[in-house]
Image 1 (tube, rainbow, N blue to C red):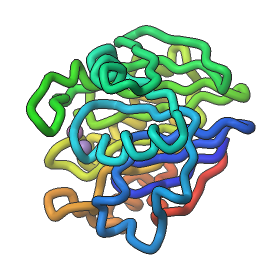
Image 2: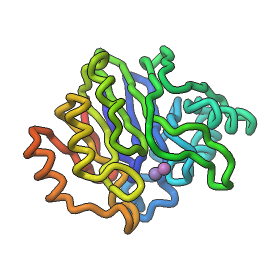
Image 3: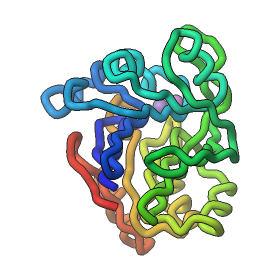
Image 4: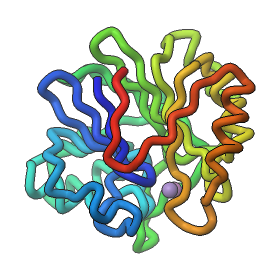
Length: 226
Ligand code: NI
Ligand code: MN
């Protein structure tokens, strides 16, 4: 699997010949300008952790151009299904075997309304199991004790965790999350996009390394192999 950082909470994941995009917020992200554009992406699937604008902004443009299947919680899948998009609904604890691998929808402590205020179900994250690897994408979340349940069943190769604080976990809670998840390799996301979530990179790298963890803060457009 190759995971590419699209800025903010956006990821592109390639699994074999399959292409996934998670939480696309590119056209509205000043920091992504000149580094990545929608034209670089052709997702077969779009995974959405929740309905906030900074996670769904480019969903309709991408899904229209590529006939992508939108995978999210029941309410978000229904919202896009009613607009004529291809969807697959999941709900917490449920998993489904897709042609690229298996996805499980996990708990997140956050909120999930669409930009117009309509109900976006309960926010979540995903565990992607493919090619004998397990990847956890936490979504926007607080630190939660439920994270301890994950390594009992899924030996994680990489965990993608929000670290920007204010709206989600910050650095210290994300270090604890990495411990709960028993995962050494962590990719940080949901930081630096706006003023509220700017972080000190050096401090973050130091704190993870002191805990025996490996934190990756990727440039927009850069990739990690799992
Ligand atoms: Ni959010
Ligand atoms: Mn967010």
